[in-house]
Structure formats: C-alpha cells, structure tokens
Amino acid sequence: MRYLVLLVFASLTWAASKPDWDGLRQQIRQALHVPDPLPNLAEKSYGKFSPTKDVAADRVSFVTDYLLRVPAIVYHPAGATITRHPAIIIVNGHGGDKSSWYDYWAGILYARAGAIVLTYDPIGEFERHWQQRSGTRQHDTTLEPADLARRLAGLMITDILQSVRYLAQRTDVDPKNIAVIGYETGSFMSALTCALDTSIHACALVGGGDWDKSSLLCQSIPYQSLSFLGDRGPAIYALNAKRGPTLIYNGAGNHDEEFYANLRRQTIILLGNKKDVFDYQILPGGADQPYFLTKPVALWLLEKLKFPNWTKKQLESMPETRAPEGGLPVLGGGIPAVPRADLRAVPDVVWSADQDSYIYESWRARAKALTEPRP
Image (tube, rainbow, N blue to C red; front, side, top):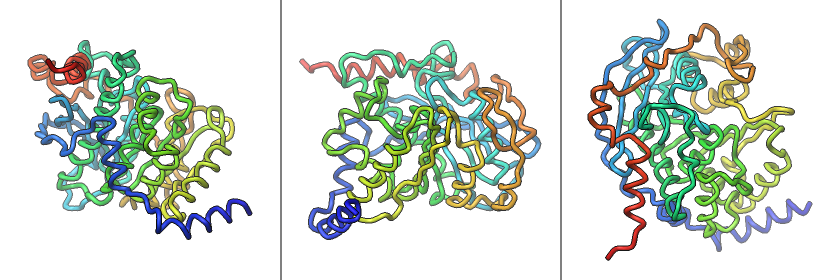
C-alpha cells in the first residue's frame, strides 16, 4: 500500500518536477569526460575469415577517444544479403576481450540467429596491450589523480558509443535495432552508455547492475562522481527507461533479489510510470557468469530484436552445451574454439607500426597530460 501511495504521489507531482533528462545526460558526459561530439570513426577493414561454414567475421578497427583505435571482430551470417539485420555489441567483463570464449561463442551463436555481432578489446587487453596479452586487467590499475579514473570510464563508454556508430553505418545493420550486452564491469559501462545514447534499442546487463558497494577502480570513482544524479541507481535506470528496454540477469550468489525489486520500485517512482523500466531475474544459486548465452536471456533478446532466423518455439527447443569455463549451460552446438591468431583484427605489420594508437600506456600519458595544471 505504501508503494502504491508513493507511486500515485509521484505521478501527480512528476509533471511539475519533470527531470531534465537531456541535461542529466550532458552532466554525465562532462563528469566522465565523454567527448561531445564523438570523434570521426575513420573505420578500417582488414579482411575477413570464416569461423564456421555458416558464419563470416570481419576484421575492423575504428577511432575512439584520445586518438586511439578499437580493434574489433564483427560476426554475421555468411553470404551476401540485402537485408538489414539486428545488431549486438558484447562489452567484456574483467580481463575479457574478443578472444574470450564467451565472445566468439556469442558471435557465432547470434550470427546464426541472423544478427550482426561486434566484439572488441577493452583498453589494456589483447591488441590494446603492448605485448598483446589478455587478462591483464590494466583498467583496474591504481590511478592518481582520481580524475584519471573518470577519464578511463569515459574512454570505455566512448568505445561502446563508437561501436554503436560503426554498426549503424553498416549497410547490413538496422540502425534502429542495436542492442548492447554488458558483462561484469561491462554491465556498468553499458548501463551508462545506454543511459546516454537514445539510439540504442535494448540493453542487457549480466553479472552486474549494483554499483553502490563497488571498490573496483573503473567503477567506484566514476560512480561516486555521479552524485549530482541524486539517488544514482534509480536515476541511471530511469534514463535507460527513457531510451528503451533493459534486462538485468544475475546469479543469486552475488546479488540480492530484494535489492533489484526495491531498485525497480524507486525507478518507477522517479519516472512516474512503469514504461520500459528494467526487467530483472536472479538465478538461484548462480554466480556472475555470461548469462547472455543462456536461454532466458536469448528469449528476451529475441523478443526485443526479432532475430530473423529464430522463432520462439525453435529457441525454446534448442539444445544446450556446458560452457568451456564454469560449466554454465549455454545455447548452441557445433561452436568451435576460434584460434587466437584468427581473432587478431589488425595485421601485425600495421599494429607494430602504429602501436601507440592502441595501448593503455598511450591513453594514460595523454589523459594525464589533460589533468595537469596549465602553466
């Protein structure tokens, strides 16, 4: 009853105190140093390969902030097409990159569904590491002054925004049907990106969604810097609702269902209505895993994106496979381990000649120069 009274009160007073949504988006951009306008994409293509006979993959790169480039692999159905397809961007968890098993699995799985799937390296991983190593977690390195942490989050958000722009200009993508999927720390960056970019159609967050207690460098300082939003969680999800549908899917081992129930209620009160307020599901006993490869999340994506090669009935009867790591039952069969060498987007000769355009050390030097007092 108390919740209903609050909702009625919010509905009656909302018109008089309507938040300035665009103004809040601009404040988030400024707090995290997200460039506006975004830099020219200057996209480059380096050929393609076939991870399976029914899926092709393009090797590309494009510009992000600080004059850096993002190496990416874009999966799509094999063969020529005149159809515009739905598209998905995978935003990795801690230490993950486009060579992670869940990235190429998602690329092949959802390309078979009829989607275009973009996977890329976060700063400090694989082709964005000076030794092309994975699992470095350079984005969790201690940074001083604190403004560098805000700039790091802004860079990671800009990577996603530029991924959206890259997909939107492809002739095989429906620019009104692009989804962002974030895993672990990727869920934080995705939630903020989807709060900023109203062109994104859908947003799915797994292994994250609650940042009030985060101590991780790439999350804690940037999140604390958004205090102007008031109650930050509901405000971020309200901005997402103003954009479109959002899903949170987590394991109960690391997440409290009552927290999300309360967060949803607070978001509805802030908005004054339930339209596009996030859906959520907490899996009993589960830990943080790449649930975007599981049947419940795939069904939600199917509903929102309308995959051309899948029906609900087909998806519900689709076989599952134990994941290579963690044993999670994931959709699909016949998905091979893609060799790491195949997942290099940029030819070695090109990368070596222009290494400073990719690596964490270049970002840190350029960002630090912007935080130093001018003489």
